[in-house]
Structure formats: structure tokens, C-alpha cells
Image (cartoon, rainbow, N blue to C red; front, side, top):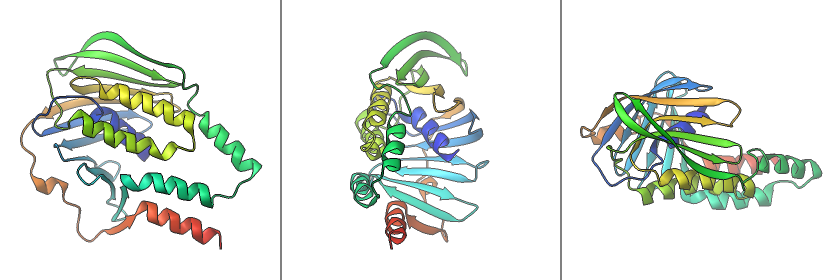
Length: 250
């Protein structure tokens, strides 16, 4: 469920735009990860609060760090995107090789279909929140991302920064090249779209997830919005994963 929420947030943000002021987006997600959420976007950070799910996801765009804040457990797990390639190498070096493991990796690699299937289609227009939106459908393998873009709005995040962040996200798939190519095609095509997504649909991940914006504000966002909560246990997710892998080998 958390993965689908994060992917849904990524869909909302992963679009090309000229620089603009701060933006606050309230939206509802339905499907396998139903929730109401508020996303705060500036040129240097994003944060999505999902009270119903009990966790927030925040990304410091300048430092390249993503935080998952679990309010029930009072934990903060962070991932430094620059550490992902080295972690992939570490996993490959410390994963026991076996026929069963090879078969599992092959199934994972083929999970999202044929990477040669890729197309971007314009699919008309629709009105969302009384605003005219251009519809685009991106198909990569068996995955489909559909966007309704309000081209009169401009994201605070420049397209180069957004693309860099999304590329870091699929860097961890280097051991599954077919899957990596499918995600690369999706994110790079999405980064070329103009405007802000007011409605999205993500399908092909074993069900559909829809996200629709219900309110947009372009008022300045105070820096305190991006403050991490005090008293929570902070964990480096990659370092913790490496530690667990080493422990299982002894």
C-alpha cells in the first residue's frame, strides 16, 4: 500500500514545467491505496501527508534524501538516493546464488512485461475542478500511466531536478534491466509533460490507483512544513538493510 501511495505521489509531481511559486495540492486516492492527502511542493522539497494511512513521505530535493515518517511507530526511515547504486552492488555481492534465486530474478525482470512496448498518446481533454486539462496516456510494458494536465499551472520543481529524482528511483532496478527500462520510459515521458496533473490513473501493477486533485493553492509554504518531528527514531534504511543481510549470513 505504501509503495502505491509513493508511486501515486510521484505521478502527480513527475511533470515538466517552468519554475513557479510554492504549491499545495489536496487530493484523493482510490484503489488499492485509498487515502486523502495533502502535498506541499517548493523548489527544494516535497512532502505528502496522508493522515488516514498514518505516514508522511518527504523528499529534500537539494540533499537527495527521501524520508518516510511513520506517526504510529514514531519512526523516520530515510534513503539517500546517491547510496542506491552502491546498495545494488552490495546486494548482488551478498546474495547467495542458486537456481531458485535465478528463477525468482527472472520472474521479477519480466513482471511488468515487454520493455519494447512503449507509446505516448494524446487522448483528448477533460474538465477537472472546472479547469480544462489535456489527457495523455503513457504505456510502457504492461504499465499504463494516464494524466490529465492543467497546462496553465506551473510546478515549483524544475524538470531537470524532477527527472534526476525519478532516475534515482529506478537506479535500484539495475539487476532487473527489463523492469528498469520500463520505469525509465515512463518517468522520462512523464517529465516531458507540461503543467500540473490534476487527475492520474496508474494501472498494470495488479489493479488500478486513481488520484484526483480536489484543491490547489499557490500561497507561500512556511519552512516549518518540512521539519521532521522531534522524538522519532531515525533509521538509514539502506544501512539497516545491509546490516540485516550481513547478520543472516553469520
